[in-house]
Length: 109
Length: 109
DNA sequence: TTTTACTTGACATCATTTGTCAAATTTAAT
DNA sequence: ATTAAATTTGACAAATGATGTCAAGTAAAA
Image (cartoon, rainbow over all chains, first blue to last red; front, side, top):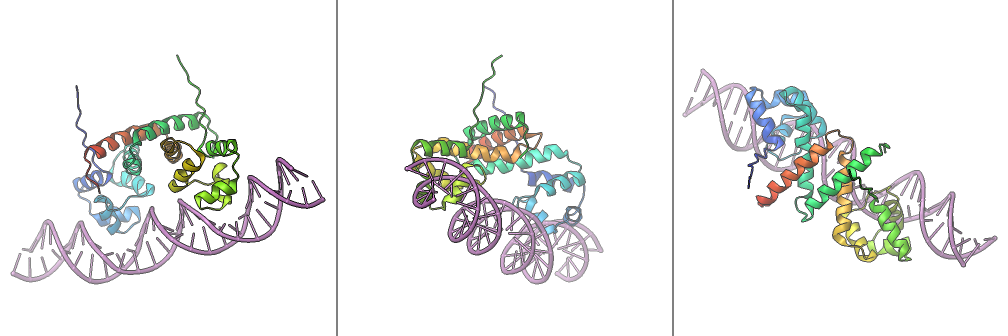
């Protein structure tokens, strides 16, 4: 019986930690994202959700792996969307099948 | 090597098929949902997405299993959200972990 | 061909997302 | 302790997306 402990850092926690470790100010990072520092402050404290564009630019300036950060971001979004459903696990499994199906029939739109 | 064939009916296809098999008219079903039949027509042809409320009332009037239909609905939504990402599979796996984590730490909001 | 059912597109309304700004608070430096 | 810098907060605004109405068009059935 192996039970792993997961950190489950939020995107906000990840970027705050990295920003601070790089010694950057909110205003510096925010200006690279083209947003007000108020938003970035909120994003870091999980009070607001970043846009996809925010994430991409954050990965750039904070030297984080873009794909990793996007995965964090999107999975977090999905998790919050379905966590209140008791069929959350079914939903994810079904979604996996649908994605496979859609990708194999690569007819865009 | 077993490869299953999945139907992958959309929610739209499911409800149109069931409505027709019950001999119900768009206008009859739509009125039960409290929406214009135009919307229902579009939902059935995947031109518009149903709301969650639509789904619940559809399950009622069409005698479909409510949870099944909700799973179809939500998984479809998620699948379309991420199908264009090449890390779609990673996202779903990460989402599963996060859901587990969130559910185990059942501190609402 | 006339009626009935469905589809289409233009538009309306409302909620959510995404952002700005300035004042208030907190943290750090002198 | 004061000041200066950094962060946080809340009120607001604009843009976008979700959800719906309506009426005119098309297709199917009688």
